[in-house]
Image (cartoon, rainbow, N blue to C red; front, side, top):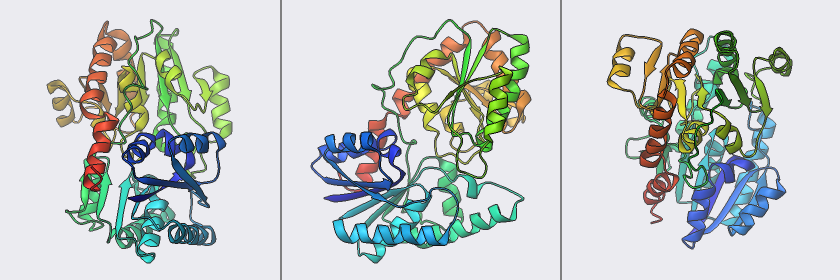
Amino acid sequence: MRILVIGGLIKSLINFRGPLLQTMASAGHSVIACANGHNFAIEEKLKKMRIAYYPIHLSRAGINPIKDLKTFIDMIRLISSVQPDIVLSYTIKPVIYGSLAAQLCGVKACYSLITGLGYVFMESSLFFQRFLGVLARIFYRISLKRNQKVFFQNPDDRALFLEKGLVRPNQAVLVNGSGVDLDYFAMSALPDELVFLMIARLLVDKGVREYVKATEKVKKRFPQTRFLLVGDVDPNPNSVRESELRQWQESGIIEYLGYLDDVRPAIHKCRCYVLPSYYREGTPRTVLEAMAIGRSIITTDAPGCRETVILTPEGQLQRKLGEGVMRGENGILLRMRDVKALEKAMLNILEAPGLAERMAKRSREIAEEKFDVHKVNAVILNAMGLT
């Protein structure tokens, strides 16, 4: 088979889809990948995997009719040129424009991977954001109509698309996130130092401000504790400002490590990984990576995030009672946008001897049972008829 995979960011072809592309190529399929722009190092990695790469013009954030039309034309030209048997797209613009371009070019087998719903599907009082949500649903309904299968990374996204009539039940396939490479993200011992870590695009909706506010409170009780932050300011309109980030650094509340191509050293430094997100995640990859390395997790009871922590019976009762902190086997779930709950969860980790160790061990077990990238990819490839 000749398979074209369309993504948004070129880095995601290796970071998120690398094992899937490699499995396709190793099975003897001719694999072509495309995304926005050039990156020599990544293009070399793809070349070694026997995967061809073609750049396209794609603006990931915002709507610009002229730029988006150019993206659509680029995709039509590329599909007409390489004439794939199968097109697989992921992230919103590649899914919408890639699916439509594939239909226009007569590609018979088209698949999409919904990696989260993001900014445009979040509840908001802002007219423009609500308008973008309506527009996205219209385009999803049109573009996904002729997809053979549409893959979802959490049950909430799948249920929403079915409820809104954006996909049919026989199209919707649920997978456990993007999966994680358990060999690359090998388990390591917990450090003795008390360190929390958050890795994310620096969007307000990822809970960055909640993280910083909670650390201020916790640091007063445990001044020796360190709080690390990894990520970069994003073109998304909901990104934190650079001036705000500088203020956090200068205050000494957090240690900002910037953007890291390899997050493993940062995860190795921490005893607990934190993602207080209320963004519409697929299943957050950084949480899976932290689980694979063997770290306790603090995250929110939000779509995509809640799938990474298995609640204990006590935690299930806490959820029913509407409490802000819900105990899990491998971590703690929080009520969204609740700084006090995040503060309490961090203090639980710091005050309970052995808790982080027990949760860390269980995190690795869950990663092996549920989120192994090879198991996730096997479901995708089987649904695409490639096994």
